[in-house]
Amino acid sequence: MEAATKSDLAAYCAGVAQRAKQAGAQLSVTAGATKVAWLKKSAAVLRASQAELAAANAKDLEAAPGYGLTDAQVDRLRLTAERVEAMAIGLEEVASLGEPIGTLIQSTIRPNGLQVNKVRVPLGVIFFIYESRPNVTADAAAICVKSGNAVILRGGKEAVHSSRAIVDLLMQAAEETGLPENAVQLVETTDREAVGEFLALPEFIDVAIPRGGEGLIRRVAAEARMPVIKHFAGNCHVYVDAAADLGMAEQIVVNSKSQRMGVCNAAESLLVHAEVAAEFLPAIATALMEKGIEIRGDEQTCKLVPAAKRASEADYATEFLGPIISTCVMGSLEDAIEHINRYGSGHTDAIVTNDLSASQAFSRGVDTSAVIVNASTRFNDGGEFGLGAEIGISTDKFHARGPCGIEELTSYKYVVQGNGQIRS
Figure 1 (tube, rainbow, N blue to C red):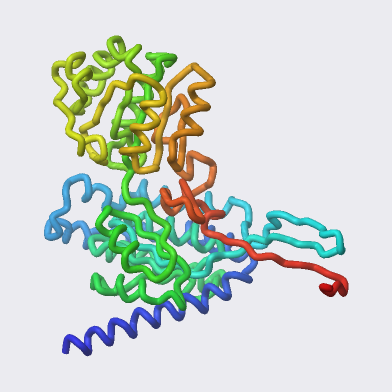
Figure 2 (cartoon, rainbow, N blue to C red):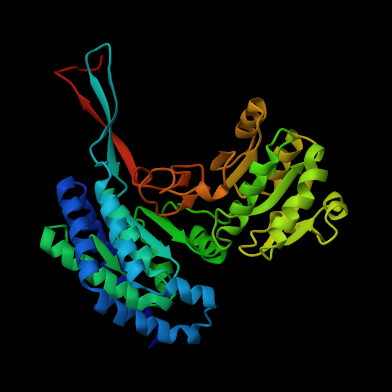
């Protein structure tokens, strides 16, 4: 029975992937106007289906206690009228973005008269594995299709009814607007083994994108037989330089850490130059502790902030995703850069300074997907960067780095135009 079940699962996953491959080939030549029509129709259908979405979401909310979800996780699972409207607006925003496919990236004419064109094309088929947030289902479908890719969505079991209802509506819109069938597919089974089956199908799937906990991402990176766009952690830093405006620095640190603590671009570590530590650390510690944030610092921090706890080596490498921040006093800008490159995750790192040379040295020296100068780490986001939307933030260096918008979900090919040239 077990062997038969595994065989059935493998056949199911292969069938989904094959259909996605076919849809991806069709999407690669689908007119941009068709994709825009689908996005706008999908937005309208979502708005008109509030009751249907609420009924599906109620089933997920009812089952939530059985999955051991925290209050915060249940809140992320909830589909309110405002969140449905936000999904619809998100689809319309993606629709308003320029058409990426077929864009001429670069064109040169060789001495022999050959015209060499570099043209943007889709990746093909994206396997997207994500956490239990129903709105991500619509967001991911929108950005994948806009960039000409078919997508296989594998959401969390906690949101299975909500995700199914959303995808059904997107498929309804696809049928009405002529979008290729199976451009968007939701994995129907909640069997964890299905992920492994899909990751073993590089002949159909071009890239896997995991979005969730570190355990999931490491599993996908280890098992995938196709490229993976990923980030393992968001251990983000704010460095307050000797030349910082300390009032500005306080606002930036508080926002970076506390505006939303459970997200990957929230600050997890605060570094302060020794020249301003005595003035800045007591003030920022008070501001952070008023928000319930625990300070874990080095010896100098603990001397200046008696309420701080002594940080361990592990604390400096930890993504807390909650009300804890590691803190360390730095002897120099170079020390701060070295600290970040040693303990950071290459996600987002900020400097607060009025010294142009310091900001330039920090920007060159820190190995990260986004350097933020005199602003909150929370701005490392596709929407905030003007990309319109994102499917995740990559800490990889190959293919895509930072927020992954529609261009990051494309590749390119060369189209060479001649008039009879032959090579001698």
